[in-house]
Length: 116
Image 1 (spheres, rainbow, N blue to C red):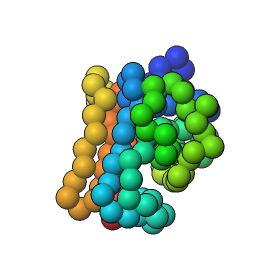
Image 2: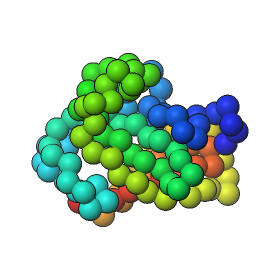
Image 3: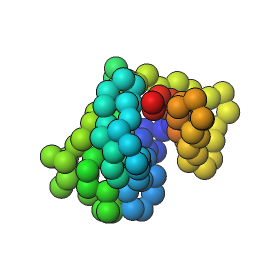
Image 4: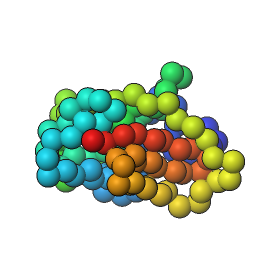
């Protein structure tokens, strides 16, 4: 991805377009081994030098670019190591496998995380 294409290193990304991307569960789950209580959350990401941080925020009914106004409502932050596809994905795509593996693909970026 280019430096002017989301996600940009060091800048929180809404992991979608327009309204915040929503992650909802009807029971407590673990994301990469950390507990996330049942509920509805907005999903943001932060690309850094040492990985990618998934951010689950309690403010979910918001416009996707308003993270800064709601950052004190973070419920969980989980760091994962991103990977890359050899071919570029033009449309932001989420996959959720029955095993609990979830992934997001955008351009050449792939973010995998496990939900149990």
